[in-house]
Length: 111
Length: 117
Image (cartoon, rainbow over all chains, first blue to last red; front, side, top):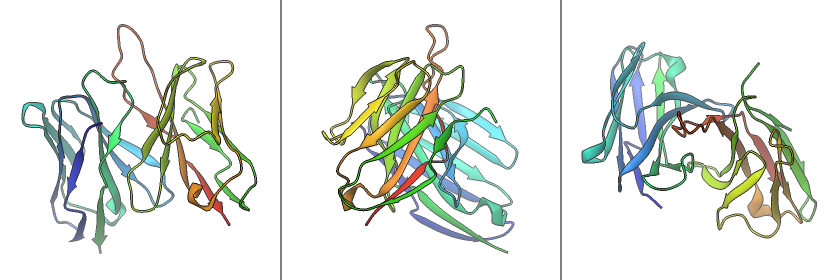
């Protein structure tokens, strides 16, 4: 498989603060996705980003595939951003969609 | 709603009973995946279908687990003789795999939470 490490494991912020979540992976990848898991357990797609930079509102993500890491930026955080953020990827040459997940970053945003 | 749907959302059963979960993927998606997530962990791959063919199975999928996708649309995941260690969230995902546009981007359903007493 492929090893996916996320940091930090836990993050506590006050509303309005910015944060950066990191995902390191151990091999060349053909897919990288960021998800937010809501309190009911559903994984919500944030970004499909095997390389490059994307932005969606207050969230943006950057993947540097050659250096085997991806970053998720959250600006002006809100209490609704709370939850677990997962990075997931699949190894180049393996089945697309067979994702390996990190253990997630638990984000708590206080009002 | 055109997302991935799963049923039931919650299932409580006694050890030794059989349970079945259903997944309806996004209608135009030809690929369907099952994952399992235990508390404090990220989801882990179980199995994958392209249309009706089951193309890959994880070692996590013991003989007590069977998955089907008979007509290439919805899928079922059955667990026979449940054990307490089977307690987990079972997640279904789908993706569109075309020769000309195949990213492997997955879209997940809300999951089916299993509790084995």
